[in-house]
Length: 90
Ligand SMILES: [Ca+2]
Ligand SMILES: [Ca+2]
Image (cartoon, rainbow, N blue to C red; front, side):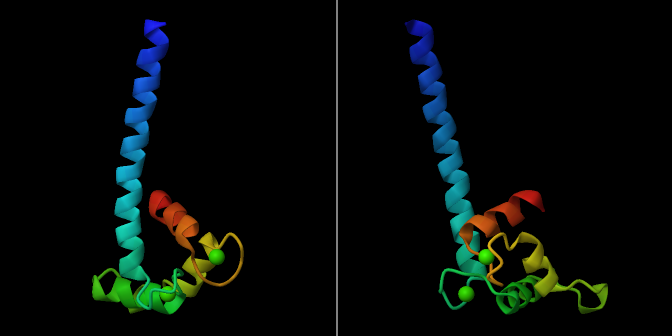
């Protein structure tokens, strides 16, 4: 019984960590979602990346393509779940 209780406590702690990480991502998502419509378009992605100095025109990197790679439901924009995947993979 003691052991089971301990394991449950660990799960709760794990969830709290995940929540903290999630709220960081929510904050990052809001930065990228300039017009606050809940989606990140390729224009927004490019705009924020260039503002952060992370966008290099001459690198040949293409935001539309970047979105396309993570756009799971193919609606042309990134929702929070898709954004989360992008942040965790890059
Ligand atoms: Ca938006
Ligand atoms: Ca999408």
